[in-house]
Length: 542
Image 1 (cartoon, rainbow, N blue to C red):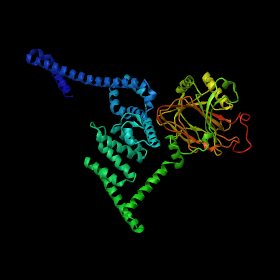
Image 2 (cartoon, rainbow, N blue to C red):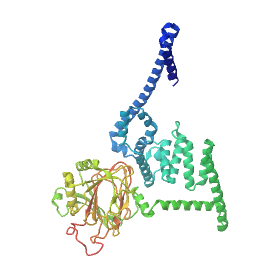
Image 3 (tube, rainbow, N blue to C red):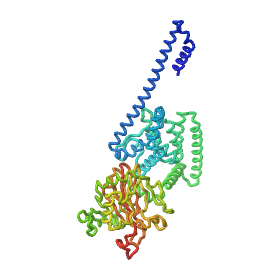
Image 4 (cartoon, rainbow, N blue to C red):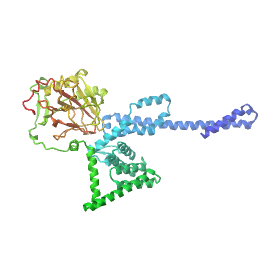
């Protein structure tokens, strides 16, 4: 700016004396000074542009290197939830901080083109979803926060997180009033900050969130300690000053109440405080689970733990299955393994070929949309937080492979596919899951499948079209069964007794995918058309 003012003054002077400059050599020297200032100004501008272009060139190089590396095996890279989180964070928070200013300096047409391309990049909604998914994985698989940040994902090597990366997770947890996870991740952010030479986060900001979340969790003493440390860093922080007075008052009130209770019960104030903290903790846990016993069993099964002892395991068999010499299965019988007898749950190994699965994935990928569930009251399809995946539907006429797969399912089950739903393909992304649910409609769900006009879902055929490195099991909490994905394998079970009553022990769930990508295909088979293929029984529970 200074160089510009000098140049402008020189130009003004030249303009004023332009007509008389030839009369004096001294006056003509002014032109030389102006010339030098012009050169300096141009050089300054060139240096600024070179610095800007160098930054843009480095930015483009970093993006090209990153995308080239990841695209060599995108499923493996993005199948790691930490990588996926960092990728989304890079295109949202980091982009707005580091890239937006550089993009705005481009020519309007280039800026417009990049902004158009940015519509294909993740949004802040995706960032929130990624953090929630990461927290879900942490809870389900009991992952230690410090180990995640250190690059250990249940034994799977991962990238390390900076203090700022952890701070972002904690801040987004705070935004949804999840103070439990806020405390965990802010504490880890504080730990990472202590290790960092080049700081990535403001320690005062971390302390601010960490102290408040601990207060909300009932840890008043620690909240006060953190607030006092915050005040040493920022003595003029008004909020911290007010919080300190508030926490001290709460502690004094709690101590007075504890002394009162101790006098009444003959206990020490310390023991009473501990009891009160346990009550707060218990109430929080009850709030977290809609059905604590079932959800606890579900999560144990997801982790591969044994929850039930099956007395009839010795009766289970494996055999080649031709379904009474069905022509399609005579030369190529199905490899069948019994998983459970009541309800009857079986698994077909190598039910689909690699080529068939690749064709199905290729057909489904451009059609994938957010998976939906049936609203029990309206019967309409809608999205839900307890089912996170994307799905597509494929018909017989879409490809000969779909026809062949549907015929094989019919031959293996003996059930008519004419009234079955189209083949549903599901792809589970970061932390993708489907919490415990029934495939069939219960009596109170009168409108669930009314629009189809084919009755209730009599049976389910579930094919796994990928191996999953960690997590992603299908579990049955009521009977303690867990099936981990096996590429090409298919699980099959009846949802209804022969009387048409629902088999409630078929309640099942898709566990969150911890590491890897999960592809499945579902075939839901309905009652209509099965009258002579699966006849009614003489007893309600046949």
